[in-house]
Amino acid sequence: MDASAAREPIHLVVNGRARDLAVEPYALLLDVLRDDLDLKGAKRSCDSQVCGACTVLVDGLAVSACTYLAVEADGRSILTVEGLAEGESLHPVQRAFVDAGAVQCGFCTPGMLLTTRALLDENPAPTREDVLHYLRGSLCRCTGYRKIVEAILAAARARGQASAPARVE
Amino acid sequence: MLRPFVLHRPRTAEEACALLARLGEDAAPYAGGTELLLLMKLGLLRPRHLVDVKRVAGFDDIADGVRLSIGAGVTHRTVERSAAVQARCPLMASVARHVGNVRVRNVGTVGGNLAFADPHSDLATLFLALDASVELVSPRGRRELTLAEFVRGPWETARAADELLTSVRLTPWPASTAAAFVKFGVHERPTLGIAVALRLDGSGTGRARVVDARIAIGCVNPCPARAPGAEARLSGVALAELEDVAGEAAALAAASADTADDLYGSADYKREMVAVFVRRALRAAAARARGVAPVAGFPHTIVA
Ligand SMILES: Cc1cc2nc3c(=O)[nH]c(=O)nc-3n(C[C@H](O)[C@H](O)[C@H](O)COP(=O)(O)OP(=O)(O)OC[C@H]3O[C@@H](n4cnc5c(N)ncnc54)[C@H](O)[C@@H]3O)c2cc1C
Ligand code: FES
Ligand code: FES
View (cartoon, each protein chain N blue to C red):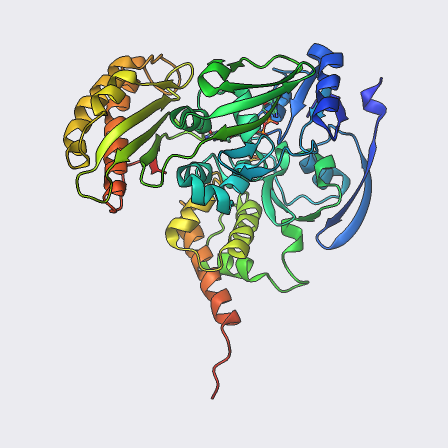
């Protein structure tokens, strides 16, 4: 059997938009996102799950798109960095990164933002230790991490304040 | 880039084994792919057929009976968060929480970890210490092997080509067991992993004694190994004296370790580290048994 001929239909929701694609079973999610869907936010760097530059969320869970078959995403919902902002207004996590100066060259930033998003969805009030634990395997060669951790803690605080019940006057 | 392959997605273990038997060397079981796809990208493995085990019925179950059974397809993340695992074997949940990074934990499975038999597996070391066994299924039927029987050497197991790992099972040790897993490393994968489990008699009476000790050493050796000399030294030791004896037991463990030179360090260095970390692991377990938090803050060290 000629494996290369066998494309498989997959249905996914990418950044809120339904997509029907046909992909080879050996296509990696990262290549499908970057080449077929022209979403270049997720980057290929280590190609071996150690750096986090290719991080996307699949049904809310962070995965390395560099080592994840596109067919596994069938029927699931994918969030890439392009889907974080609402139009021109930045997602609170993005805003926190900008405010804290947690972005230098920006190469790691899409992965950092999505990892943060997954962390805060799971654990809205993380400690510094929780943040460091979750960031294992998310590498940044510029910032020295300090400002990234500050940004994440600030994003968590901002979110806590926004969702705190309004005080009765 | 991956070389072309055909992906099979059987729903039953019988179907999966029949595929593996028919396709022979051309096929590989595939779960999360966190190891397999890496090797395929590098061209080190070139299977033309992948047999996905994730849809096989029962492979993602955690069964909480007399024994605790973790399906081969259960991810590290699911183990970490499972209420049953947290209640019956909290050390397992804690070790799962520290595997690799969150992306590997979200996708990588317990079965894939054990079947791959990387010497740097934390799970194999832990399960060896906890007397766990694995179940395998093939067209010839089912069989159960202890972890020591299953892991034969680096990347080598007793699994036949048409066999699948279905689950890992263990009888949880009593809640009063003093246990700790300490891992050390500066790379993504650990340089050293030490599991200790000490069954205590008379705990809570202030006169608790070790009645059964397990020490397993991982990463530095070709496959995880127990340290029988150190275990024997600890048997009968009072909890109150454990910290004093820890150094001696640690030296015995280091003497028994089959360390080798590699990129993670020289054999001598690793032997030295075994002594240091067995001592720390014993002290951590002893501290927990007394209800205090283990000393933390050693560089590049995780106390699970
Ligand atoms: C960056 C990184 C860091 C890591 N850090 C750690 C760590 O700190 N500690 C640790 O313990 N591990 C670590 N690992 C290893 C990790 O735990 C494994 O990669 C993972 O559990 C493998 O599971 P998988 O489902 O992805 O296996 P796959 O990649 O799908 O398969 C691995 C192997 O097992 C075979 N296989 C899979 N399932 C079965 C089955 N049911 N029956 C028979 N054979 C099967 C496959 O054919 C293949 O040979 C790390 C891995 C990476 C990539
Ligand atoms: S490129 Fe995928 S983790 Fe580094
Ligand atoms: S900002 Fe440059 S790698 Fe992180």
